[in-house]
Amino acid sequence: MESAGARVVPIAFNLKDADLDQLLSSINGLYIPGDHKDIVEDKSYAKHLDRVLKKVEKYNEENEWTMPVFGVKYGFLNMMYREVRVRDDIVSNLSPEMHHIGLPIKLVVD
Image (cartoon, rainbow, N blue to C red; front, side, top):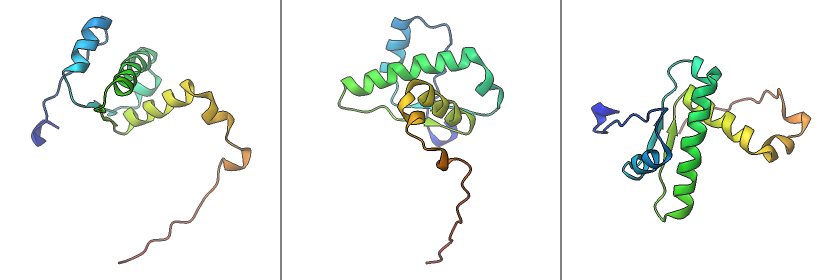
């Protein structure tokens, strides 16, 4: 990210709400890394990520400019797990027939 010109600002786990709000208001995007599978199983990481994403969602609802959130590998997986935990309607609307379906991929050459 930094080699592409981005400035990386780490978000500490122990930030108070006011400090987290101030930090989030000073950045223009959120990158959630996912370099190791242990972060999926780490409850403190999931709790912190949930806290940060709630604040980003609130920010996006209250402002006309939307802060993008980009999760990579296990970071994206953590975001997906969070959505399933937060929104029961996603899971309850799935039918049993939607699980374990293999679909062919058709590659087309232009």
